[in-house]
Every structure is written in structure tokens, then in C-alpha cells.
Image 1 (cartoon, rainbow, N blue to C red):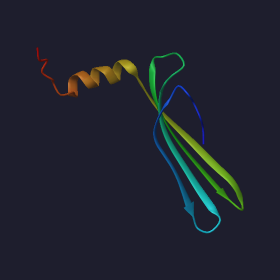
Image 2: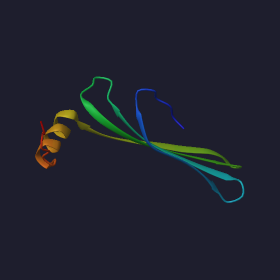
Image 3: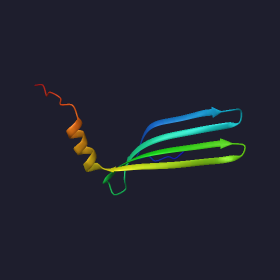
Length: 81
């Protein structure tokens, strides 16, 4: 599995598949290197007697778009004194 100290691990799972196989999954959330995009990374790795296979997918969205969506869709909260 990948390791990035500047990312937030949302899910990490290791499961045994069959007698001799192991499946590892990880989902992380991070900010891009230029700090303008929010990046969701999904990583899957499978260990078996036949070898190791892995794949990583990344999905990103502009931080400004995320903030506008949160403002438009978020629930209002009351500020108490």
C-alpha cells in the first residue's frame, strides 16, 4: 500500500482471499502539490503465488468548486452566544 504523510486515510482494509491470496485496499484524501485541487486516491493491491498486482486511481476536483458546493449544499448552523 502507498504511504503519504500529508494525506488523510479514509479507509484501509486487508483481507485474505482464498488460501494463498491477500487483498489490500486504501482510500486517501489529499491536496494536490500546487494546493489547488482536492484529490481522492483509491489503491488496490493483490498478493498471490502468481505475483503482485496493483492499481491506483485518482479523482480530483478544484478546491474552489468544493467550497462553492459546500456553501450551496451545506446545512446552516446557529451561532449561540
